[in-house]
Amino acid sequence: MKRLPLRPFILAALAAALLGGGYFGFRQLAGNGATPDYKFARIERGGLTASVSATGTLNPVVSVQVSSQISGQIRQIHVDFNSQVKAGQLVAQIAPETYEHRVHQAEADLEAARANVAVQQAEIYRARVNLADAERDHDRKKMLVDKNFISPAEREKAYTVLEAARAQLQVVEAQAKNSAALVKQREAQLGQAQVDLGRTRIVAPVDGIVIKRSVEPGQTVAVSLQAPELFVIARNLTDMQVETAIDEADVGRLKAGQQASFTVDAFPGRSFSGSVQQVRKSAQVVSNVVSYTVVISAANPDLMLLPGMTANVRIVTAQKDDVLKLPNAALRFRPQLDADQKDKERESGAAAGKGPGGSGGKSGKGEKAGKSSGRVWVAGQDGKPVEIRVKTGISDGSMTEMVEVIEGSLAEGAEVIVGQPGAAKAGVPMPRMF
Picture 1 (cartoon, helix red, strand yellow):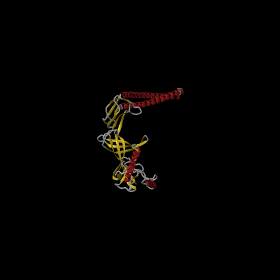
Picture 2 (picture 1 turned 180 degrees about the vertical axis):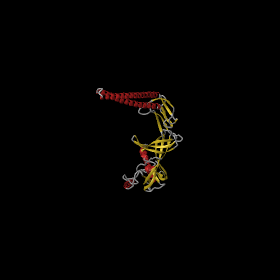
Picture 3 (picture 1 turned 60 degrees about the horizontal axis):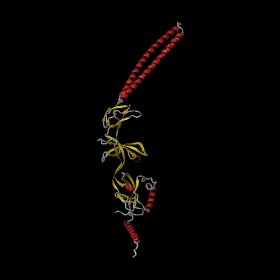
Picture 4 (picture 1 turned 30 degrees about the vertical axis):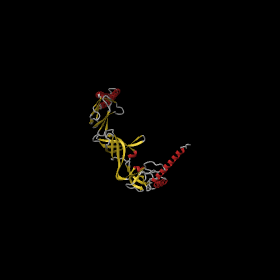
C-alpha cells in the first residue's frame, strides 16, 4: 500500500491555526473598541511650595587666617586643633635670636648716630668762633686801611678769610642737620627691628577656636610675596553659613530673607533651617556654566554642624495655600492624534498664535502666552483626548498651580490624562485594562 506524504496536511493545519488566531484577535480588538487606554490623575486642591535645590558647603561666618609676617623657624606651638583661644594669646613662637641681634645692631647704630650729632654740634661751635674771629680781623683791617696804615690788599685778604668762615659755618650746620636726620633713620630702623622681634610671637587676632593648623615645631616658614598660612581660627561656630552655587536660571527667584532648609550626610533624616542672607552679584563661570553664590545663614547652638560639611539645600521661593494643582505629567503629556485631530490641533495653534493671549502660535504675546500657559488633555465622550488650555503658576517639581482655564472646562476633581500604560503602534488600538 502506497503511503501519502504528510507535509501538505501539516502546512494546511498551520494556516488554519493562523487564520483562526487572527480572526479571534480582530474580534477581541473590535469588541473592546479602538480607543487607546490612558492613565489619569485628579486635579487636587491644597498647598503648593516652589523651591530651588542645590548643594553647598558649610563654613564659619567669620574665619581668620593666622599668618607669619617674618621668616624663620617655628620654635614652639602652643595650640592644637579645636583649641579655644583669646585675642592676643600666644599660639606659636618663631626663633627670636636673629631678630634680637638686629635689634642690638640697630641700637648700636642709633648710638653712633647720636654721637655724630654731638660731634657736629661741636663743629658748629668751632665754626662760629672762627667766623667771629674773622669778622673782628676784617673790621680791624678795614679801619687800618682807612687810616692808610696797611695796604688794601690786606683788607681783601681778611675779607676772603671772613667769607670762608661763613661758608664753613654753613657746611657744618648742614652736616649737623644730616646727622640729626640720620638719628631719626636709625630710630626708625630700631623701631622696625623691635617690631620684627615682636612678630616672632604669633598671637591670635580674635577670640575663637582653632579649626586648622598647618605647621609643626621645627618647620621653617618663608615670607615672600604671600604670607604663609599657619592657623585658621573660627570666631564662632554657633553661627554657620552655607555657600551654595545657584544656576543663573534660578537665581532670579532668590532674594535675601527667604527661608531655607538643608540636610547633611553626617545626620541623615535631620533637617536644619536657615535663611538666605546674601545673593552675591559676582558670577562664577565653570565649563561655560554660569552660577551665582548664595549665602544661607543657619544657627548651630549644639555645634553639630562642622566646617566643610556638604549641605543639600532647599530654598523656598514661593508658597501658596488652597490652590488647584495639576500633575506635571499632565502638562508634559502629548497624545497620538489621528488625521482629523491633527488638523484641528494645527488650526487651534494658528488661531491661538494670532489671538491676544494664545499659547499655540509662535507669535502670541498676550497675557496668557509664554511660560505661564500650558495644556492638558482629558478624555472626551468618544474616549478620544480633548485639549484644555490653562494658565499655570508656581510648581514644586511634581505639581503645578492651575491659575485659570484659558480654553475649555476643567474643575477640581476632574481627571486629566498623564500617560499611557504602553506605547501602541500607529493604527493599532490598545485594549482597555478596565
